[in-house]
Length: 300
Ligand SMILES: C[S@@+](CC[C@H](N)C(=O)[O-])C[C@H]1O[C@@H](n2cnc3c(N)ncnc32)[C@H](O)[C@@H]1O
Image 1: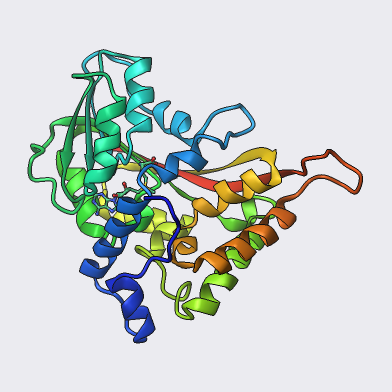
Image 2: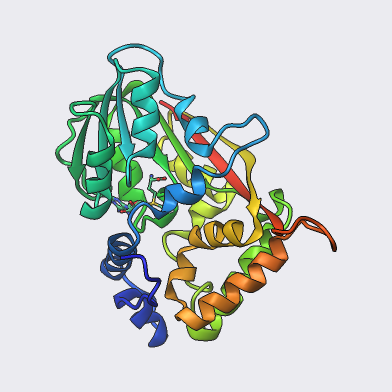
């Protein structure tokens, strides 16, 4: 289903009541978004590249050991784009994908060559099916931001990594790093808050993951003996302004709660904001969207 009917869940109901949603409500909300819009993350993320032409998936994949037989987990693998890239780079990797949403895992299963990865439905806070010290790398693309509680996730990652193993995560970067990003964020959240006033003050996941310093502090506490770095970059997407607006808005979970009429109005305004065509420019107005990203690298 991709009709963009407005999403309501136990999480949005808590906001309406003025209460802080609990972990079960967060899970229910994420499950509902991914049930109805499975694969939406890669639509935007695969269209956005950095100055060197790499997607954020490529940037994460670069941190994976080259050695044949290296054991790699894609934590919250979604529809499997990163597993796909990793397998086609080195078919000798031993890949596992874990996600809590069956609809996302079904897409991953369908796209990956048979036998290229083990897929499992589980929550990141409890990876009991993965043995202690059994992995050389854990990757996590655009998902750590959504996890609350997040400390048990970091504890689980530390448990499953072998000595010398790496944890590499792609998360939101500082808004000011990408030109125009704050305006896009504020436009979308303005529409969302007119329907659900508490959205934004309370957001999905643990807010510490969204700040470069708070992320470093949190991860250093969970991996006291590791080397921890956070690098910032920017990825951009270009194309017809209406397509860029649709893909960019699709990246904001908040936009899924909008009514169809409000969503359409927001998209029209967003296409105008992202437009790069001057007066008398091309027949189809062109647009551009820039997104800030952080890559967390933990070497144990
Ligand atoms: C934004 S999508 C990213 C998917 C994929 N990594 C990508 O970038 O294309 C977030 C994914 O995290 C998964 N997820 C969120 N919280 C999770 C948790 N606590 N345990 C397992 N999966 C989780 C969702 O089911 C969803 O597939």
